[in-house]
Image (cartoon, rainbow, N blue to C red):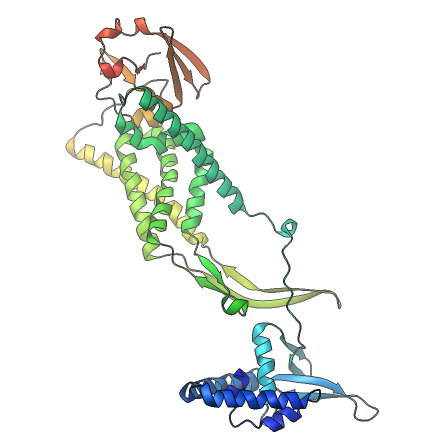
Length: 437
């Protein structure tokens, strides 16, 4: 019926005579279709479709030069018969030409160009029914994205377990903990319980996500056509992905803490927010773009058996964007460190020196607050914060058992020996961990 809309003043009897197998039923179907179109189809819409169809017909006939061929033998010799699709001399065949063109669009037929020494033939193939078959999982190569996803899930699980243990200590201590230390949970617990290398891989997964555009496969009209559509990520997804980039900030702050020393505490927090905001704004302003390069090349592996074709390249990620985000992390950290040093130089001050203890991880030494946890020259640490830095404590039988997961050692501290009598200690220090060696 759509083919009849594309043909003006069609002669249904002439079209039916071209059907040799069953011309009678073909004529009846054509007459019923024409009557239906004249009765129910909007004339203005029909005119619009007809105008668009003429443009398509001109492209197929005059630019692509699509033809149909058939070997015929009118006498004792074979000859090659050629007919141009939508040829001006084949007016009555135009309805069938549109049906062939629809098959081409649906993938039932193919158009192949044969280029030889004496000319070029652009031919329409015979019809082949599409075959849907499930892909063999053994033939699909494993992608690094699968391993990164499992790594992210593993890190999330470990962090959840650590958070659960911290919550148990908070409940057991009836809230007598330093709540500000929990604000750096990801920084301390990630470096201690996960490790730099796994955290580095998680940070790379965030960089890959920010440097990759989102494409969604669309199959409208019950799978009649298929195409990729660029989908913009929701704003909250961009912000969350930019926040994941701070895992790289944690590593940079930790690795260079041996050089930044007392400046680490202030500039680390500043670089956290600066990197998060800068990366999110960057992705909003200049998101990664996908590109498609069409260059079809086919190689015959085995004649009449196997042909390998490469149609082109679809790029959804940008290596330049990836490297730029990594440079952004180092740039923000370096800028924040320089600003912190300049601020102290301008005011003629020095940053406070953190309390050194062999039980504390380097990041914890700079990030944990100690204002209310010093008593008579001894630094204390609440047991919930101790879990973040890899220390598990159990108090029983008048002794405090300390298990340091970083060095895999167990220490025993007798409670009556902690700074004299325990009754003299403030309430929040009576069940805290003294940082003594």
